[in-house]
Length: 199
Image (cartoon, rainbow, N blue to C red; front, side, top):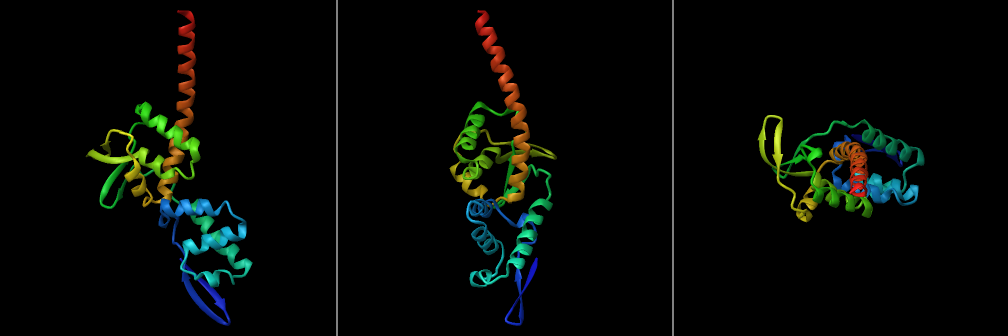
């Protein structure tokens, strides 16, 4: 998307991202960090990260122009496709979203729970590396992924190249499932506790 900025009577064209799909997880993590700063600094750093406008020019932008640019960025983020793409390709290799969250293992669940408790914003690459793993077999819409072994460091780095839009969609999907899973887990633990008391 082009942004026109007038300075000293001259209009210059700069590029802003075209859609939220242009933002990868690594860049999104930076944007999340920026959001913890004062609003002026957040806007300055966000515009710098998502456009080719020079920093010295960003600092000279009128507030009304900053509001317009930030509004366009926010609209792109909310306008994005919210459908979960179950298979993504990164560096020529296919990675599939866990095909059946009902079959999630205790190891996967425990690691996800730990990363969510630590700091979900900082642990997004690790969370995504658990949910998306290399596809080992694929037939039409059905696929299988590598078994979970807990070794996710290398894949977490690779997942930073994944589209932030896809990460958001996966997290929304997982969050909805997680709420249901927690209810079932609580019910199951209550039932086990009842049985233990009766013995």
